[in-house]
Image (tube, rainbow, N blue to C red; front, top):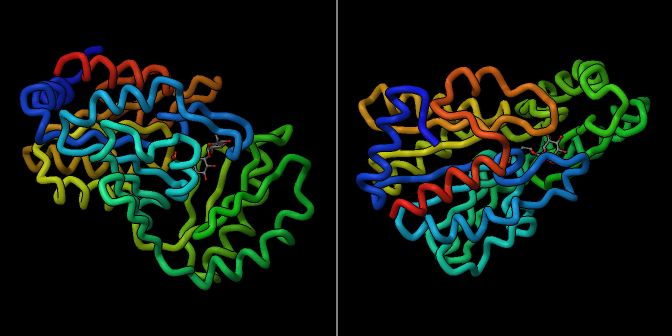
Length: 274
Ligand SMILES: O=P(O)(O)OC[C@H]1O[C@H](O[C@H]2O[C@H](CO)[C@@H](O)[C@H](O)[C@H]2O)[C@H](O)[C@@H](O)[C@@H]1O
């Protein structure tokens, strides 16, 4: 798998030349985990964990940067206690939460009062919505999903004004995604999470792979990292559901792969080079 851009080729070359200074950072849903109708029924690609376990020991670190709570990613993927993943970090809730395999320590933010209030209000907001609308209670955030409705785009669009107004009133950030609108505490995004992780690992190169709107901030962080003279590789995991890829990712990616299958194949091809 060859990057289609010079910058991407330089990023890949740097990762291969000095893997012990490279960070691989990955989104979860749509990137390691195939998109399914019900978030609670998500699963990781069957080869994802073994492939990461082969790759990670050669690297400065591997981070899963996700909108999910850490515990959800841990439970769905079974990352804990896997030999080879001792240097894995999960940055959940867009970086507000953190778990390190090395210590098993989970750091969670205090509850945001806006989320506590929204939890009470949200059932009334979605009460008149068509069948198939689901509230996902993520603990530190709440998301409204429309994938299971007859017209997911239109239903999300119709719910948007009331959700945006609740977010503004309660001091929450709005995080759009694939047939989902999430209301969450402000203050961090995947770009902030990635920048901090790269600095902490003293990384000299980075590969970031993502598929959804929440990953744009991480793409921005890698773009800035490259402007600062550091090599990086941007990978877009194109949806395998028939949905269009996120333009802001696909148009800037050095490499476009097909969903988690393609991401895992890429990671496997890297592992084989070390
Ligand atoms: O940052 P991510 O790891 O990509 O998480 C973003 C959101 O992903 C999940 O929703 C998405 O995946 C679901 C399961 O495949 C799918 O049903 C839904 O339509 C997608 O939007 C998750 O449920 C959210 O909490 C995450 O914020």
